Length: 280
Length: 280
Image (cartoon, rainbow over all chains, first blue to last red):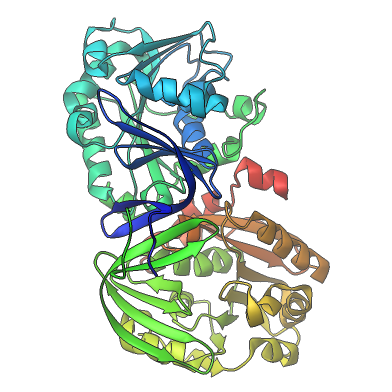
């Protein structure tokens, strides 16, 4: 059967994910990309960037929680955090739930993504004026290159796919700058695409991180229903130390609510399918 | 953008999954349903039943391994197994990898599904003539009602969605018959749909199993890229005993190859997202 213009469709490698639309409620061309907002029939609101799914109201919790909580509970005491990209502010909101965190600097290239999110996804942006948060709108490559050595505990690379300009965010020179900015024991986490569709890319990211000199690399997996294949990964790399156990008791008795993440999920998400283990 | 007739599309609740097609290579109307086989661009062959995805060459390992190995390694010594449905024989093939298993009886309503699978998915059917396997083509409700008490260790409900006739396979009377047929400590596992799309249904299945009198119920989660939402569950229920630890050392040193399953995945798959835990 065919899908007509009442559906949004994202095609990737002979596979497509579509959402049925009620209406388009916003469209603009920012200096960097086309931003569109739709009301969908069953997934709430949808934001797309240049025609690719950025998030929906209904399932963004999967991605945002898993970009924030596993890395933060894997660090013994994360105080200073940077988010690269993350313009919709969903990851920022999750990071700010952590009492240990003193500062979060978000470096997003396109201010319009954040302004549009503030308007159409207010539930993700309600902590944007938290005194611990600084929102910068500039190129993260330059920012990271100039940032002070040993000044951050956690860096979250909440980026778009590694195409065009964003490719530089998935390569050894940038990971080396992150390494320099991290304190001993600090952790960088990068969204690293789909296990089934992009295995070569995950292997690549891990290899670029290795070349940059991290002590250990760990890929985690989780569902994101509206991303290609519905199955996603993030890859963490630690400076100077191996990953020990995570702060399980803190995670088990956390003071804030989550929809996907909990301590059992934390323990589970680093279990890798056999084909991934063999590829690594 | 629109998808035309060169794509197969399955729509569920305002969400759609599509695969790009090369050609349709088979189509027939069996006494029970329309069976179609396509060659896809990137997922190998696709079988659909009445227009719904049954399996693809590329990702069926996710489903078949997770319907077979967690339940079999959760049982201390599974000897006699039944599969309800499972006409494509992918689950059967996985079950027969286990040396402990003496007999597998598969009760599939539609013989044509199996015959078509033998022709177009020969890699799934290569063990169909194993001397331990018996393939029956009849109604599983009657079969289970008449089967001997205390005669099976594991029952795998590898069924279609709970609509039409298949609804009876997701209800207390059938689960009670399964309970009667299981030996003490025996386990039934049912495919139980998508966490995000069908949470009420999973809650229902668990409740029907509870009413039937099982000692403990456990839902596991895993990706199946070509099923609605790309995220799937199965629900296990045990007769007379709680789930203890699984046979981890056996799973860790198993003599056969898998693509998704391994002992770490086994431990991880029963970790439930917070929203599921709260719903249960």
